[in-house]
Picture 1 (cartoon, rainbow over the protein chains, first blue to last red):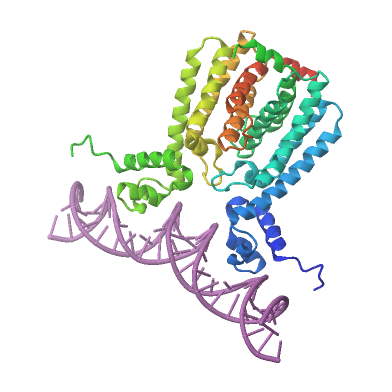
Picture 2: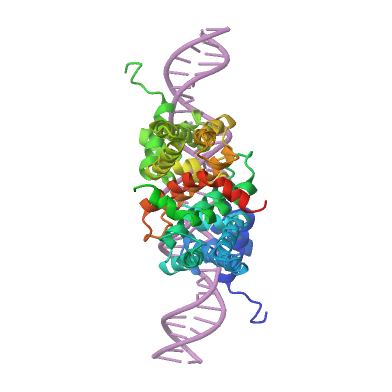
Length: 206
Length: 206
DNA sequence: TATAAGGGTTAACAGTGTTAACACAAAATA
DNA sequence: TATTTTGTGTTAACACTGTTAACCCTTATA
């Protein structure tokens, strides 16, 4: 029992919560479940977390971090703005499909359950989108992309990717549609729309 | 108590369930809640519905029907394929934003909770997408749209619209983004992508 | 008249997040 | 040193959840 190996109970709770989340999913993530797995009573969790929401917030943080590192990696893997954007799109979808439990608590769970997320953490989550927005801005700067509002464009891209991830991983998409094709189309689609944006806006009167 | 006015209990359950869903949301839709509101015991619901899932399936049916009529209406309001498609996109998003409770049980709820939806009902839900796919096909037929696979294109459009609806109505989109602008961009974007699809596909190898 | 069926009830089970009250050891203070 | 206070954990309980089993009473049928 050296000082190193005795994990704080808080860490232990978080670890088993994450493990339980990835193995059995959010639906079966309960206070008593977590507590039983580590040999404590359920109520002792409340000594380290204000509520279940609070605990899940911590897990969301991990997810945000994970997604962030994936996006940064993708962003660094390419040099051109279009290449960077497409790489990030693929990274985003890959994260969503590979870690559906994380994705669920991050972007799907009804926000009434998941009570108001602390403002500072919100900023961190938003920064992931800003990485994408930066690529869009660079593209505009170099004349490849035509768009007046990078943040709006990034959000539009986000909604497209989010839609693909959620509908695919909830198995709501017709099985006759090839998931890979749909993902591929969505990613290319996002990038392509950045190139032709100007024409669309001027086309209609608004 | 003429024969007309005595509603069957089944209908009464369904009506209050729908009302409860729209007023208090799915989170507070419980068997006991429904039963209390109509002066019956919770277990009597099980005489008319196999389970809560079964009841929710019936509500989903109503939602599918409602969305379907909205899409058909939009489809009939315009003549050109592009006009029809865009009108349907706006109708879809409008439905999602105006009836979030319906949208939630139809397209957001984790399918583990909402156990397997009967196959016949699945077909009906899919038909809504096929209305959109028809517009795409017509567009291809008249040369306005360039696309090899109408069903894939319709699904891609669906994911875009779904992403906008869910991220907006769960208030996950940064408040500095104007929702109307985002919706507008998404809808125009979907239509515009149909026009330029061919170029995108041939652009990259695969 | 006896039997079966339909439509409803209460009690109970196993589970949920959460709070209140209590116990005990370690640390801080008088 | 003696006495508090604090930290860390417990059990019991509340108010919920979906669901099942057993029961009751009225109506229709053999």
